Image (cartoon, rainbow, N blue to C red):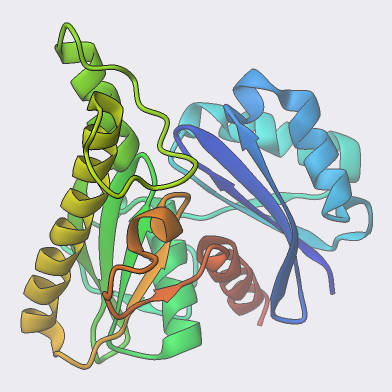
Length: 250
């Protein structure tokens, strides 16, 4: 059965199709539904919403949730499931205040658990860099939150008189032979160091055998060729949403 999976982030939104345990037809929309509702509806159609039986959304922007509900209902006749800490999931939750957990973090944890078992660590490279942990019992237990790469580069530009706003796309410099290249090196090498330290800290708590799974828009840019042992899985959040939706319908 075809199902629609939607991940609403602070800077972009991803829409995809979940069918037979596989995520496909993924579209990323910069700015999301608030900036470009027509692009979001096209993404839903491209993902096969006209033939879908269900849809689920993980959102860190609660103000747009009703807009998504209305679009799915009006255009496709689908009642949208919004992921919260109360949604039945394939992982348990061992956390003092469950309402504080971001829906994207729950989806990441569920996806990593379904693919890699437990314990497992997820690093999501978005506007923020989040680390989430599923312990050996299969329970989500929290994690670590750090500034994301876009925040690092934009903050340097905003708070200094001469540092430019750096575009991190494109070839990676071999040396800091310009201000822009020096900033690119600082962002990439600094992030690798932060990932190593945080992952080692977490493994000290949950066990050194816990695999690290990386997702989010900057995961490949930051980690590819770093020597850090990890699984880079761009579709992890959407995969986790599909796994949760299947669990709800069991």
